[in-house]
Image 1 (cartoon, helix red, strand yellow):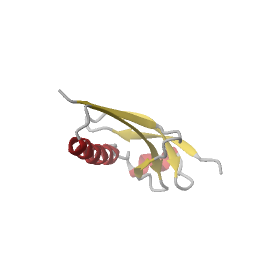
Image 2 (tube, one colour; image 1 turned 90 degrees about the horizontal axis):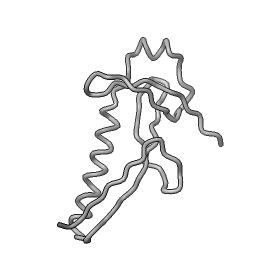
Image 3 (cartoon, one colour; image 1 turned 45 degrees about the horizontal axis):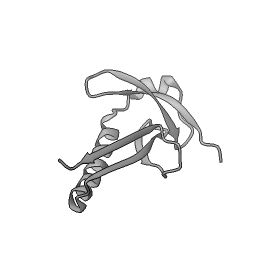
Image 4 (cartoon, helix red, strand yellow; image 1 turned 90 degrees about the vertical axis):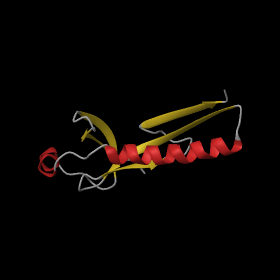
Amino acid sequence: MEEKTKIITVLLEDGKEIKIEATAFEELGSEERVAAIGLPNFSKISETIEIFANTISKTIEKVEPTKATIEFGFNIGADNSNNISAILVKGNASANLKISLEWQKK
């Protein structure tokens, strides 16, 4: 099954806009529809990443390795209403947002 994507504009916390590639949950509307609804806010994505990273961090702190590196990826998805979500992807899947976290014992 071929994954459909679309470039959408999202609003960052500082008011700046960026374009991102989003996986379409369903067929997306036109740019005119996006403008009428308003720009989706990227903070939903940021919050998801922060919650996931904090959970991983707590686990790393409990097991106390001398060094640890965690790499994970999210795909950004959008539905017909232009709501965006971060979807954690398999390790072997391509992600449009790849994050590496590293801890080292001092």
